[in-house]
Amino acid sequence: MSETASPQFAPRRFDVEIVDEVEKPPKGAPLAGDVPRQRDYLEGFLAAQPSADPLEGDTLTDAVIAALRDIFDPEIPVNIYDLGLIYNVENDDGHIVVTMTLTTPHCPVAESMPAEVELRIMSVPGVATAEVNIVWEPAWDPGKMSDEAKLELGML
Image 1 (spheres, helix red, strand yellow):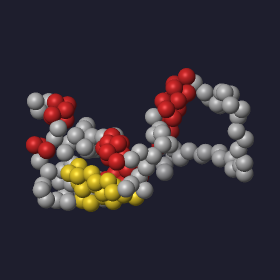
Image 2 (cartoon, rainbow, N blue to C red):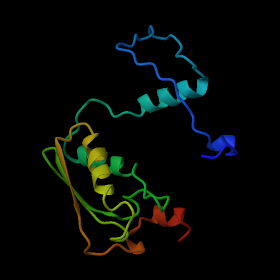
Image 3 (cartoon, rainbow, N blue to C red):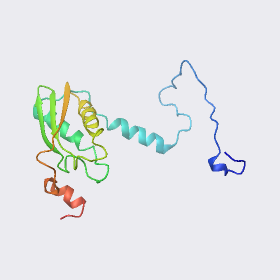
Image 4 (cartoon, one colour):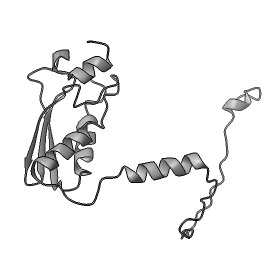
């Protein structure tokens, strides 16, 4: 790097302290740098965590579908379930099999989306195992979207 390089591109040095053990603050004690926004975010995140009670039957399938509705296509601001990418969700005593497609075989998340779907399914209480199968037939088309998705995209 030349001596005339701008300061914004100058290398930075970070001081890191490695500790063996971290002492937890007493319950209710403010965190270092605590601001209301951080606290609200954390409380909202913890409140949104699934309950520990396992679900059964149709309620488990419904919970899996709800979890799938939390995954959004990276290029289209609609969740993958309402987008019509999920063709089938089967529940066999906690073994969940999802058959899905992608908008195109050249989708930028073709390699990572199945793993994300599997992780999201496994986070649902009561799910023992998850299997995600990507299929290309029938091919996805905009007609597979829910009315809510079409409305969101201004297609209705």
